[in-house]
Image (tube, rainbow, N blue to C red):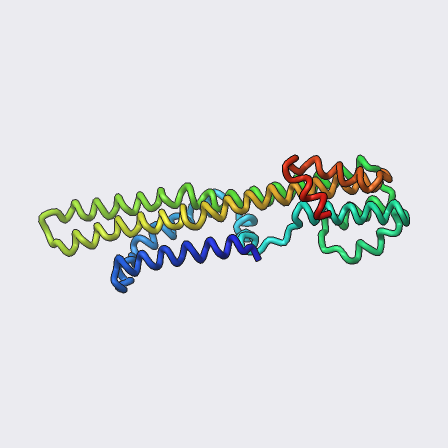
Length: 259
């Protein structure tokens, strides 16, 4: 589980709930607007269907799951794993790594390792794995795009609801004050819905997925370079140094100690 995502979500919910409680004195019905929900919620959903293919929308539960649960390997874990594999391959030969394949749960690493063990040409291994990285990047882009659409167009629908409420209020000028107040409430509450959805939900989730995508791509690139080095029969230290090229200089000592 991604502790930072959970902590951030809890803090946001607590802050919003506390302020709402203080402002309404417990009368939570003040923040409910059927018209605002229909306009902002329904409008935002319509944008998602208009802008994204159905196949991508079916992956939405996966996008949310990835926000709260991240199973990717850290750079230090990758360095240690590939160094261990390199040492075993150099000591016992490439075929000795077959026993390690069964213990792995990373399809990318398993695929590359099997090709290396089978003696596939390094260029073919690199081309195949880079194609997988490209496909993964495309999947991650779709997840980021989903939340970006909400962040961009949700406020637009909130503004539309606000304008509808204001038109209703102006149309009743000089009339029933209760009706004017109700229409003004629709305008304000709809804006609140859109602001919360865009800035407190969709924006942070999309940015976290983008960051995780960059981390996973880095991990895959490190694995790729490690596999090519192992297949070439390089010294494990050379394999580690090859992967360290992806790590900032300031953090390399710590990674070497962890490895």
